[in-house]
Every structure is written in structure tokens, then in C-alpha cells.
Length: 235
Length: 235
Image (tube, rainbow over the protein chains, first blue to last red):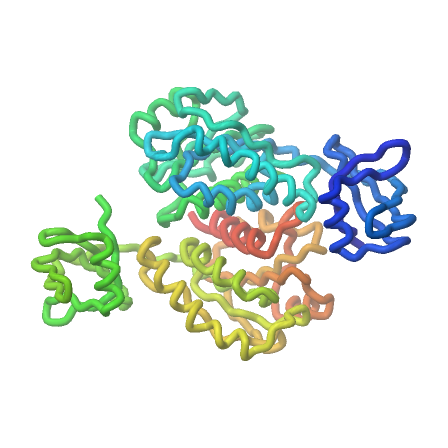
């Protein structure tokens, strides 16, 4: 049995929902005696029961805590910002579902977008990320960092990969036997990387990998890379 | 160096484009002396050169044949039709880029869509598939079959997988050492499979597999499954 999930908090053994979440709950037509799940964004999931619901008021109580496993593999995605920022809007639910921990928008040589334009989108992206955790039942939303210049990134993950269309030899398969807990992935935008960017990232410890012979759009490359990383390194 | 690719044919050593493809070529602002690639949908890719181009006329000649590897792994995707058919529109470019050979829309118990509604979409889906091969540089477009009832499917691939959320033990990883040339994948829609459907598909040779602990939307499940199948079985 699976119950709808909402985001809110528990205070004095009572469920407190924002107006927006209460609206979502009403849209689902939940009624007295129905159950739902509550994520308090502090790592707790509660099974809750509705005692009373009216147009303006909800009385609901946590019945029990639900155990939920956290993702063990920590994946950070560094993504050269595409010129069409709405592509990121569309990508976030995929990243969220696939359990990516952090998205770092990176301003690369081929990004024609200014830092301010990206910063304006952050609130919207965070909202998309937050909304998607209800359906995919993550504990915490995908974190989205403010945009960074490529020269300023310095990740400390156990292993770092750069998917690069000019790399023809090295593939992810050669690394699947390694035991790692945290991974950074770097993926370019449609314009691809400049050679000096690849050299810089190699110095920072990124290993250039091929994603195969196919020509993939940025979105497909990102989803494929994340899916394969999980397949490769998860038990 | 990468040239834009168009679909057309070569007759008497001259390039012939449809009006629509000629329009696309003009949109790319190609001019006399420029090169482009031509896919004749018969397995040939030509590098072509523009001798003359005006508003209404193109004179272009093939210079040489370009060798292009065909995908070795043949992946057929059986997909329970979601109730929102536009989800398939959005999925086709991904399937195309990832080299899926054939999409078979399947009417399952949880499909509320009628066969006729699906049939009406086939032309549009084929068009989306055809358009996407120019960018991703496939030789042939994704084939899209007319919809089938689940009870009528009978694939003869080397190996057949059914991704099923109630399967918790078996995973794709356990099969990656097998040598296979053709694979059928079956994926349900948001409503999931009925148990009798799973039993029927098991009798047809489908092996139920888990896609992990995450709750994935249909689109994410499909892309992840295809990406992982390729990763698992391709060299």
C-alpha cells in the first residue's frame, strides 16, 4: 500500500502543513480516516492519519515513523549551463528521481548566459526539486548551488568524471570495480568543452570518459551518465 | 569537423531534397561551397557539396560516402501506453538518440487509451523519430509499430526483460556477462502491471528485473533501463 506524501512538520504531535501543501492534500480528495505520509525535511517520514478535514482546517496526527533508506552513493553533477535555461527546468525532475545529491550550474566558455540570469532561476529550480520529492519519495530535495565559473570549482569527491565527446578510449566500465561513496560528474553543454577547460579539469582530477559513439543531446547525456554511474557503482 | 545532416536521395549524382528538407537547409544558412551530409535512409551517408543555392533551387553533389557504424545491439522496447499520449512524443527523441531499434506501444490492463487513439498518433511519432535522426546521426529512424494488445506480443529476442517494481531480488547486473545481440525490454505505465500480466510475460520468456529502490516516473524508468541495458551489454 502506498500513501500520498506531503511536506510539512510535526509539532506537539500534530501535523502542520503550509497552505500550499494543504491545498495539494485537498486536491487528492483525502478525507477523515485516510492516511498520508509526511516528510519533515529533517530526515523523518511519518505515517499520519486525518482526524478531521474541512475547507480551511486539517487535524491530523502522526501514527508512526516510517523507515526510509538514504541514498548511499553521493552524486554531484557539474553542468555547463546551456543557453536555453528551460532545459534545466526539464532536467531537474530526472535528477531528483535518480537521486542526484547536488546540481552545480557552471559557467563555461560556451555558456552565453550571464551569472545573474542563472541566479534568477535558482528559486524556480529549487521549487521544482522540492515538488518532485513527494512523488519519487526522496528524503531530501536535490540541492542546487549558485552558479560558479569553471575555474572556481574544486570538488573533493572520491572520484571525478568528465564526459567528453573527444575522449574515445576510456569508458566508465573500466572503473566499476572501484569502491566509492561520492562521485562528481562534469558534463558540457551543446557547445562542448574547450580544450583548455578539459586540461584544467584534468588537473583538478577529473577523468575524461567517452559516453559511446552516439551523439547525445545534453539532456540525454546527463540522464544516461547518471543512470550508468548508479548502475556501475551501486550494489 | 561536423556537418549538418539532411535526409534525401542521390539520383544521377545529384542531391534531391524534399521541400521541407530544402527549407531546413536554408534555415541553416548554407551557401555555395558549403558541405552537408545526406542520409538516403538506405544505409548510405554522403558528404555533399553545394554548387548553387537560390531561394527555390539547390544544386548539390555527393563528394564521397561516409562510413558509419550501425548499432550492433538491437533493442526493442515494449511500452504499456500511458494515458497521456504526449509522454510518448517527449520520449521518442530520447529513444532515438539511445539507438533503440523498435518501439512497440502495448495496450495493457492499466491503459485507458483506445487502440484508435494510439493509431492516430503513429504518423506524428514517426515524424518525430525521423527528424531526430538528423541530429543524433543514426542511419535509420526508430521504427514504431502499430499498437498491440499485451496478449498478442511474442518477441524472439535473445533475451527479454520486464522491469517490474515488485521484483526486489533480480537485477540487470546479474546478466551483463551474457553475449546477446538482441534484447526486448518491457516497461509498464504509471498504473503498473497487473499480476496476471507479469505471469503471462514470464511465460513468454520475460525475466522480471528490479530497477532499484527509487520510484521512477515512466519516462525516467524507460531512459534509465535503455541506458543501463546498453551499458551492460555493449563492449
